[in-house]
Length: 165
Picture (cartoon, rainbow, N blue to C red):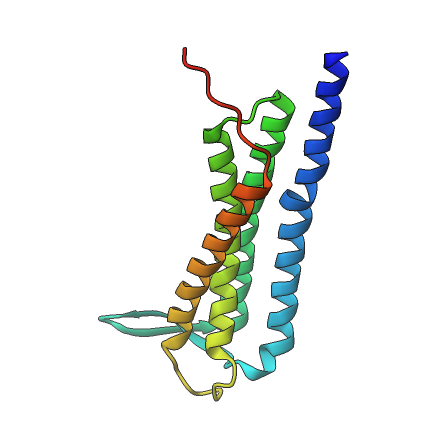
């Protein structure tokens, strides 16, 4: 009898975690890409990607955004795969939960960089250069990463106490 209730509890946890680990990251990524595509006409086609002693390096805004969006996919995949393994193994200790929360939150932080950069660039003239996009990207990372850590720490299943062996 306890085996069935344990399996049903695990299924309920998997069902609750599915939207958190697959649907939400996927929808967030899609919405960020759509937002960029909608606002692309209001953003300069070239933005500074590097500022250093040798000068300023420019790249295509679309290329930089594509790289940022692609970079966000990896932490989402790693966090989801780890969570799946922990659910399958039947244990969810604080260390495992922290790793999943950090990876998934990193994905959201990277999306925050993209969204902050977009916000910092909207309305600029095609030939105008602004350092605000870098600062807004960093602020976006901080805000999105922090919000995701708080949300995922609260919404993912409660971790079991680690055994003292």
